[in-house]
Amino acid sequence: MINFDYIKAGSAKAAIETRIKNTASQFIAGGTNLVDLMKKGVTVPEVLIDINGLPLKQISKDAAGITIGALALNSDVAENEIVKTKYPLLAQALNAGASAQLRNMATIAGNIMQRTRCTYFYDTTMPCNKREPGTGCGAAAGYNRMHAIFGTSEKCIAVHPSDMCVALAALNATVQVSGSKKERKIEFNDFHRLPGDAPEMDNSLQPGELITSIHIPVNTFNKNHYLKIRDRASYAFALVSVALSMEVNAGVIKSARLAMGGVAHKPWRLTDVENYLAGKNISEKIFKEAADLAMKDAKTYQHNGFKIKLGKAAVIEALTKATA
Amino acid sequence: MDKQKPNESRRSFIKNSTALAALSLSPVALVKAAENDDKIASLFEKLSLQLEVNGEVHKLSVEPRVTLLDLLREQLGLTGTKKGCDHGQCGACTVHVDGKRINSCLSLVVMNTGKKITTIEGLANGEQLHPMQEAFLKHDGFQCGYCTPGQIMSAICCVKEGHADSHAEIREYMSGNICRCGAYPNIVDAITEVKKGGQPL
Image 1 (cartoon, one colour):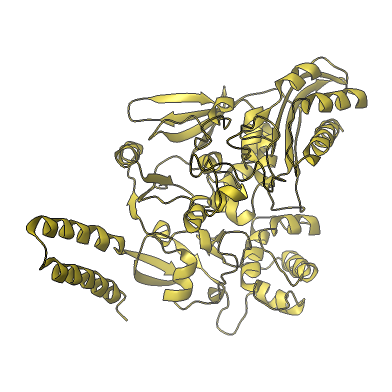
Image 2: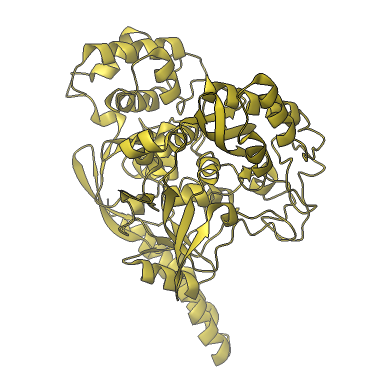
């Protein structure tokens, strides 16, 4: 690992100012992804700004929902009683991600900010427009079994690796950020970007902006299920995943939220399917039609064609399990 | 041994060698060379900090890039903690930080200032093994043994966290520890016994 200067931030303001002053600086929280990227030479910061001392670990409930501090640990959030009872989808998604050790280190904001695990992004001897704009996409004509089927561009077909973010997308979370001049809220579904012509930009944060918390609004969902399909039973990134929340009364779906992971550069919200499901009676036929609709616009590559069949099956299974 | 010395000598070596080279240079180049000296020297800058490992406080001087794993093994001689993948994928490097299990390969030492670290060497009380160590021996929870320190450190927390109520739950919450020999059934048995025994861990 190439060495760097290490600064412990005493306040969010100081952290942001230092970050803006030095474009080759990075915030570090849990470090589970960043330290790995630094070992691989994918990210080479000159200055690391340690934000772990900032008072951003609180989890608090109010009438409008729940606010989770940026530095709350993935494990603490997954084990939080309010989260487990009122937002079970989030707890399930968190526990589906990484390992117990990593969840004890990784923070909520770090989970949101983690980079893709595309092997071409991680291998500095390979072309990658995300790591080094203009070098090309190694995955498009390479080994792309893990890659995206929605929202891809010629420049990049990587997927966002988070499970938690898929649940947050379905739950209409917002991300609270601080910049040098102002604070602002970003709707979760606007936070991560599609690759387009600038795959080096994972999200809509402005230079120097720091995530301080996330907020999840209260909901009336009584059926929640996070389904993750992967190459082994645990501790692997999703081939596809489905985050599903529904309000179901007497066999009728009043409202539904659905997002998928492992299929796009951002958590893939399926509003068409949500609209289709609203008002329908629960049935196998409806679930199958929802699954077909979910995969309608999928575009596959040489090695990931299986994701269409798998994605449909995953949507059906999530709907079936949630309503069982 | 004074850990500061190699650092100082390297730094002064860089300064001296550039200063010698600068004798033959013009004044402008000399100023530039001096600026570079500071830049190069700062790359080897070490930070002073204190770390409590297995109840013993260590005064250390480390570069920011040193991971907790490398510090334990290479500076403190605690080689029980293993380097498997060095990328947080195998769990061989699992230690406890303030009682929580973490991957020491992905944690920078400088981020652990003031925290209490426990490694596999810190579990036994003299000749008296920790209950989890006893259980691994009794159930033959290993073959080559390379993953074992990480498995044991992780297993203790698995029970403490309350995630050892069934074989399925143990497997899920121990999934961050890979055993390429495949001792999993015996590891699960060892953890189950400790959980049922209810001893303080």
